[in-house]
Length: 392
Ligand code: GDD
Image (tube, rainbow, N blue to C red; front, top):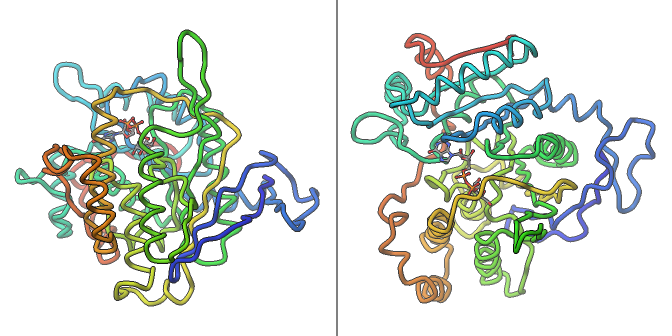
């Protein structure tokens, strides 16, 4: 893959946020000319090395099976796939349908896929046994929520011994785009100079149908707003206006496990914004650090623009509102958020404090001290995990 080198980097304490880099060539070999002053070549052999050490977590809730199958088929074969489903089980058992589809797919491809259901009693009890109560509701089951599903996936990725974890939504209609996202994750990890790295995807376009024809919009409705406020928060410390954050809500992102295990996570749809906020809180040098090595080695955030457009399921205005409120609440709840920005956001969105997002907002503490091997053993002994295909 050939990528532009980052032209601009915003520094916030030990955190480096690189501005958007574009993909110049999707696939390249060792023979392609290496780094020039503005372009880097990451040959496919190096990308494959990373893929062998990466798990891709797919959170799923009631998505179309055909779309999910397309997503799975696009993930490079060396990656372990971890599907965390929260799909309906009553009336029609959608999780069973997902399982049957995946089993048939693995029969032909022989690749490694792990699957769990987020609300399985055995999953709840394995979580309780390892003392990770932040994930549990009053009935001892894992809370609903995309973030909660992603965190279960991260525990499994760590238990499998992987060094990298990436996320891909299950509602992506274009397998080619999914394939590109995973290649980008690996390429960025190759470029990084620190072991504490996050890669966030910025879509070339998010097409919509408007008046009967395709309209290639650049920014999602939620991202536009989240990015603006994240940038204002950074500006309030540096004193220089910035537009560096362009991926505040990027569901498609990846991290080194060394970074993933240190972060505290925001629940539900706040997770992506919450990750940026938590990185600034923990490693930005304003608040006291809990972990010193990342302060020394630095934390890098890459934002990489794809070639493929992002074509996914549109879930309506109420869903958009919920995602926006989840994201904004994470910003206003941060000790880094200046009072003036907090008031500005509450004035603009007065309903936010009364919303469902506000009632169910939770923080899920980092899993650095969680015994992930015992978690996996607990799932295996209660038959709460399905492990298909070759061993990892
Ligand atoms: N396991 C699990 N549990 N998965 C869930 C849950 C849950 O409770 N809720 C949603 N998901 C899955 C969906 O099935 C989908 O694969 C993925 O999480 C994203 O959820 P969507 O409901 O499709 O969100 P979206 O497509 O509108 O928004 C996505 O893009 C935003 C940026 O544009 C999400 O990734 C957002 O988090 C992101 O901010």
